[in-house]
Image (cartoon, rainbow, N blue to C red):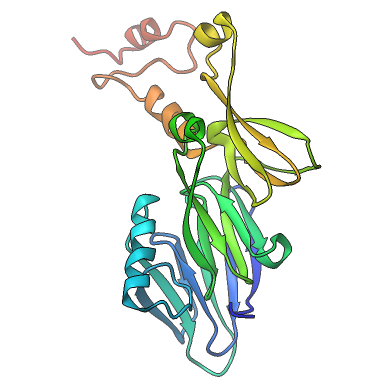
Length: 265
């Protein structure tokens, strides 16, 4: 194996975190902002590029970092190493309510494709790069654009799904239609394209967007019930405007606020 062989345990239900057990000299790489806690003896190091152990030289590291910029991520990642003789633990937390999904890349022939903000952490040696779409429709209307993230190697990686996670195993030719924002990731053999919803009423009044993501097997697809964009949209829509409450929970709405004395004149 080229990736470090790590052990792990996932804790929690709605706001999960993953605890990685590192043997001496083992390491794990993570996105900025996912770190939660670590034992004494863990060394933290900021690295340039995707964190893989491939000896690609300076130019290769520049290209790897450039791909990370295209996916909206930082130029740098953080690596955590166990510098002592005994086992040590380091933990990484979910960014919002949902589930942490362990991905054993050896089970998926060394490659898994996920949305740009799904990656949480991975064993040192796993390559985190960009996956470019060759289909125009998917690039223009797919929600994730032309670029998704790809995780490559023979180690463990961890991705995050918002809300409740569904794992769908598609047989050859079997099709699944998903809201474009609800895709977490899929295996490399899955054919991913965009399909127009169709119908005048559906298009104008459906409220579900103009396009579905069409995923065709064979392969495995992970779907999330609450993508961060939907969560953020709900939060923003419920914020009071101009400092005034929207009267949540009252059938009187704003009039209820007036009767309650919340509105000042």
